[in-house]
Image 1: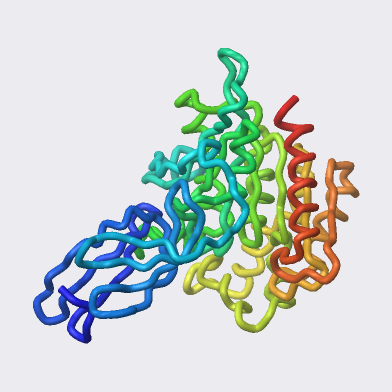
Image 2: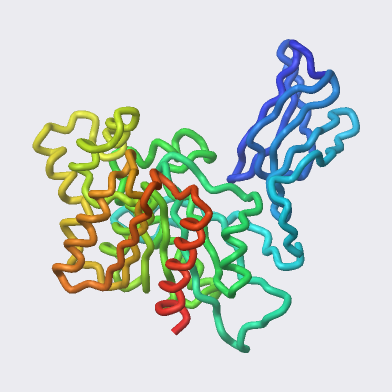
Length: 360
């Protein structure tokens, strides 16, 4: 088979891992291209027998490759980083599926990417179990992939187990799984995070008394909801430019996403009164009194997606109730941190939180 107008080269996703297949348009013939890469973002035709791609494996960072479809071989062209990190320190990500056991609808399954702590230069005390950091991806219609994530490795090389929860509503598991979050955002994603923790504790993989939760954007919203609905399960939380008030978010966010939450929050035929009720019931700022754990809020001052006011309001209501909260505002940053010094500061702030709550 050749790369010509009669053949499609397709990236597919199965259980958070990517692969490439060649499909004959007329014949329907399908050929898998075994490149042993799990996170593939781009492919481009180079010739009738080669294509270029950007991809990573579970133990190599993102890079540009060429792939020969006749030899089923890949050639490295350029890596995404020039910094050498000894591969022996890497802990390969593993995909797991676990039962949904928490919440009002404990049925079905959910998924996660688990990375166990590993550092060849250190070993944990005999009989101990590691603390766990639960990461909630943004979107919410997105998913965390299996490719090497150097930020995750930062934590696993320091003794933390790390779980990326691909909760109900995540992409990469089929349309039904993604659409099952509709009308239940702030509920099912939260229950899945809790179910993942319970599963890992019951398997004896982590210390259930030392669990933190972190997320960005909509993932930060899930963090706040998790601290409210499962206050005894999480020892601390870090909400990075997360949503605290759904009503003001819809009024203050940018136009492109101004109606994104409609299907995620409300039944199709919900009245204005029902929408108002849901907005209040699922807005963390109105239930800050239920949060028992320390909370870190990281926020860009120029954020147009989740405006600064969201974090400012959350900090205010937490302080009024005598809660342990810290808000760090990054001037000149929007939705996500770009400047190196700010990325470094954010990691340091998060590490300070975990040290005082998960390493006690």
